[in-house]
Image (cartoon, rainbow, N blue to C red; front, side, top):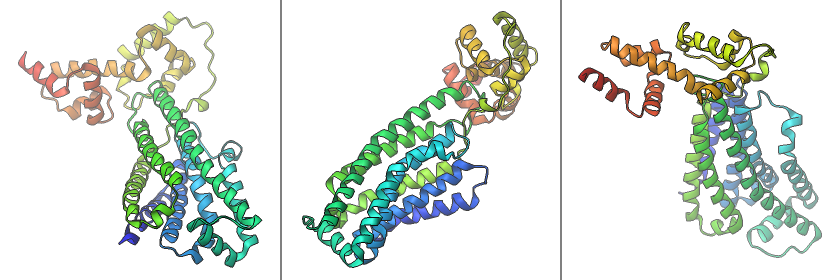
Length: 375
């Protein structure tokens, strides 16, 4: 019975590793990287299974790998967040620093087991790790120090990488409001929610680290709850990650346009012409860089102008015109469906139209249409 619960996270991580690695597109680096994350997570839970079912002869070969894997979980998760937000590709110089500590602890642990050999290595696992006896040899003392170092590193990572990821996601969510008019599948609010869930799970993991695995080794029924929680969490990560595309800004790929000689008032007049006369808001995937090319100025110049003159971000500014156009359509063509209005006004989907209308007008679209019909 306990075996089934111990293997649940293994099945979930292997399933998503295969889905993400085999079906992810080569250019979709976040998806492929998330597949690698699932492989590492699978190694963690395979090691857990061997340890808690007391297969120590086999676990001897996994312990160093287990240490590497569980110390890589948070750095890899943070790199995944970076690939979704600010990094367009894996950069060894930029990302290698996140995995240095796990690799060093892994190598030292591997060397320690190699020095002990299998017989003394299994003896170390059973007598010291499981039964809690005091180390009697220098190599055992060395391994205990490494074990404690690994635990301390994990506890530090729990706080450090979650805070970094929270800040990165929040900053990026604010940025995309100034870059895209349609944030469907671009927003990372789900990932922020995931971060909260991950944080709660991390808190549980930290508590487990402090309590020690032996508490669960001798009370295996306690393993059911964390197994279910982590299985659900990992499935959620895999499911949402398989549908999420990278939303790092495209600003690096835009030319450096010159802003000299273009007064704010002239730019404002041209901007209003684009929206009021040419109705560029009807473009469902309108981006700040599209307007940047039309006006011949840097995108930051436009976002600053919109903020200063209208006290809005780019997405809110575009949606303002879309709402006005949608309301005009409702008044003049009451028989149009919500789908038709959404498409004609420039919204990507009816769902995004409904959500944005409610947030902006403080009234649902259905209520608004009823009010118009009653007038």
